[in-house]
Image 1 (cartoon, rainbow, N blue to C red):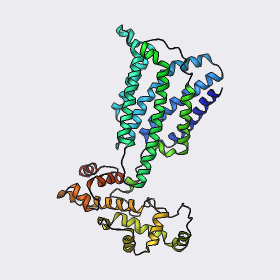
Image 2 (image 1 turned 180 degrees about the vertical axis):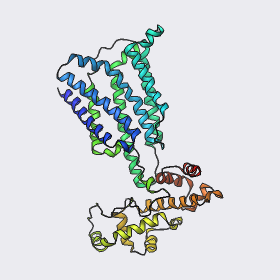
Image 3 (image 1 turned 90 degrees about the horizontal axis):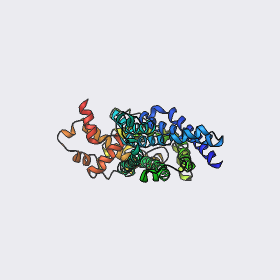
Image 4 (image 1 turned 45 degrees about the vertical axis):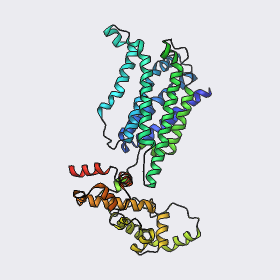
Length: 388
C-alpha cells in the first residue's frame, strides 16, 4: 500500500510541475516542450500503476506492463533537452526528431511486428538488444555533453557563476534520475538482453524506487521553478548596444536585504533619499565610461568620479545592487569594448589588443566575460553586426 501511495504522490507532484511549466511555456518553448513530454509520460505512468495496484484492475495492470518499453522515449528527450539547454540558438532543428523517430519505429516493431511481416524476417528477435545498446549510447552521449558544456562551464561574473552552479546541480539530478531509470530497466530485463530469456519479474515491481527519485525532483522544481527554463540571459538583454541608459535591471531601489550592522543602519537613514539618483548615476556610468581601462581603478576612485562618499558607494553595492563592484567593473569594460567594436576599432586592431585596451589582463578572461554579458562570443557578436 505504501508503494502505491508513493506512486500516486509522485504523479500528483508531477502534474503540479507540468502546470508550472505550461503556465510559463513562452519563457522557453523548446526546453519546456521536452520537459512537458518527459514529466507527462512519467507522471501518467506512475498514476496508472498506482490506480491499477490499489483497485486491482487487471486490464490496467496489463496495459502498464505492455507500455513499459515506451518509457524509453524519455531518453532521447532528455538528450535533446540538454542539447537545447546549452545552445545559443533556441530555434527548433527538425532533424533532431530523428532521435525520437528511430526509437519510435523500434517500439512499433516490438509491438506490432510490422517489418517482420513485411520482409519475412525476425527483426523483433533483436529489438530488446537494440534497446540496450541504444540506451548505453545515449547515456554516454548525455554524460559527455553535460561534462563538456554544463558541469565545467566557465564564468567570470558572480551572478553568472551562481546561475551556472544552479544549472549544474539541476542537470546532475536529472542525470541521476536517468541512470536510476536505466538501472531499474536493466535489472528487470538483463536476462532478456543478454541471454534472450523471457521476462520473469513484473516490470512494475520496483517502480516505487523510481517514483521516490521523481518526488525529490518535483519538490525541488516546485521550490525553485526558475530552474525549468535553463540559463538566464537577463544580463545579455541589458547589455545590448541599444540598451536604455535608465535601465534598472541591475539595481534595487527598495532593498530586501535585512541590515544587522548598526553603522549600515545609520547610513540607511542618512542616504535613503539619495538612493535613486545614486543608482541612476551608477547605471549611466556602467554604459558610458572608460575609467576601468585602468586595472588599478578602485571603488574609492569611482566614488571620487561620482563625487559621493566612499561609504555611500559601498552601501549601495552591498544593499541595492545585484552586482558586486568587481562585476560592475567587468560589465563596464565589456560595454566599453562594444563601443570600440561599433566604432571600427577592430579594423586596425585584434581582439587580443581590444581585451587589454579595455582593462583585461589577457584575451581569455575577456572572452569569458564578454559571453557572460552579451550572450555571444566576440566572434559571434562581430558576425551578427556585420550581417546587419
